[in-house]
Amino acid sequence: LNIKLIPTKPIEGQKTGTSGLRKKVKVFMQDNYLANWIQALFNSLPPEDYKDGVLVLGGDGRYFNREASQIIIKIAAGNGVAKILVGKEGILSTPAVSAVIRKRKAMFNTFLIFDFLANGGFIMSASHNPGGPDYDWGIKFNYSSGQPAPESITDKIYGNTLSISEIKVADIPDVDLTSLGVTKYGNFTVEVVDPVADYLELMEDVFDFSLIRSLLSRPDFRFIFDAMHAVTGAYAKPIFVDKLGAGLNSVANGVPLEDFGHGHPDPNLTYAKDLVNIMYGENAPDFGAASDGDGDRNMILGGEFFVTPSDSVAIIAANAQEAIPYFQSGPKGLARSMPTSGALDRVAHKLNLPFYEVPTGWKFFGNLMDAGKLSICGEESFGTGSDHVREKDGIWAVLAWLSIIAYLNKDKKPGEQLISVADVVKKHWATYGRNFFSRYDYEECESEGANKMVEHLRDLVSRSKAGDKYGNYVLHLADDFNYTDPVDGSVASKQGVRFIFTDGSRIIFRLSGTGSAGATVRLYIEQFEPDVSKHNLDAQAALKPLIDLSLSLSKLKDFTGREKPTVIT
Ligand code: VG1
Ligand code: CO
Image (tube, rainbow, N blue to C red; front, top):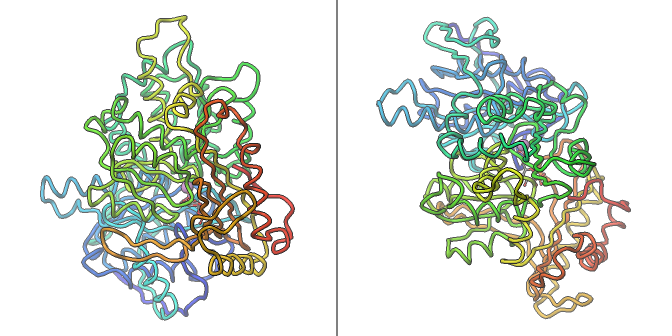
């Protein structure tokens, strides 16, 4: 293999955020922008992690992935990687990349064939951010057990982007990604794989497919899945239709497009409007779900009913042992990100399970899973998952919910009233109490104002003490969340300003780490309600006093100039 050494210069601003490096496509298209970051990554990894090793490559099908695939493959070869496993057309969802990395690892363990050891992988996606020439692109690196690279690695990569001087590129032609198969270039190999096969096999191990099929094939159960023209379009038909017997019409927007059909592939009440309209419209289906750009998020809806993600993970955890074969001996532990509501805490308490609260971002769950301490976890941001992979997993969450509904209805005769999504949620609230929760996003604010607001909040925290009165609320604790990983002792600080009151209510502020322009302020509001007679209140109404308090104590309107949030979930 002929390796060219291309001289280059450092480029500012290549620091990864909550989940990889995300910028406008035009930024990534600048000379050497992506190449610098990829080379900096190889400069940061110990050689034994990639030399003569196997790396996985895939993405969500967005604009620029084709060019990016070629750049990444050639630099990987230039740095001595032996083999790249790449999804056909460059397609692999985020959870599927994690699954493929882990699966190839298992083959190493069983057969001791070094060639099959996958050391990690690249995901070409800006997740739920819009795609197309004027929008976003992104890249994430996942490590050897399929988990997002820890901050120790991403910090090193950033350091190396500031001193890089040379890129190692293999002199090979562009690789054909349109058909399955193996191509050799000297001692470097590219294998184009089916994006669905390994992932589907894993799903069949985790779930009871015949149980789910028994539900999806009922005439009195109607199901719709909206792939939002993003990566789960490649998975939805093979899984829901071909394997599980859902009708062909049950998959909407099922073809992945480079610009997601001009959409914003974020499955929430604002951006998945089409699905929301169907689920709240006349003659609504019984179950609706959607997933995001890279297939790791999920939204679950019943007929005229929205399941808030914080409740969703709690309900999955509470029902997992009965309804999902993978958890038949019970989950090992549960975890949520800090801003996610405490609904899951109550399930952990009742089931007597170890429980963890980690900072925002899936990378913090991986260590707990690898150490055998954690099985099911979630984030309020429509992320739910388990230790079957090391990423949140949209289709997994849909299958988990279908399993629960199928299990609860398995003895229902045709014509009998089925237990609905809303029934399941309301019963959960009646058992555990309801954690009212809402998140307000103020997207693309001026950075200066947003940063000043955070300074103001930190100042408020430093001056506050337990017992302080905030309107009708009495402060229990105010801080900027700090996390020490119980497995490796690494520390993540300043992960969000929180005000926790004596009745358990919480107000949390943080700035997004996934945007590509300006600053996005996130405000999270939570209040626990044990009284069943109040469970049917609308969350916005129930939380109104706390929301007003959040806005006044943060002076958000003054600092950002925003009257209203751009997204409410
Ligand atoms: C957001 C969410 C966070 C999630 C992250 C990645 O981060 O709040 O919970 O893990 O996106 O999700 P931030 O820093 O913008 O709040 V994904 O689907 O974009 O990879
Ligand atoms: Co995503």
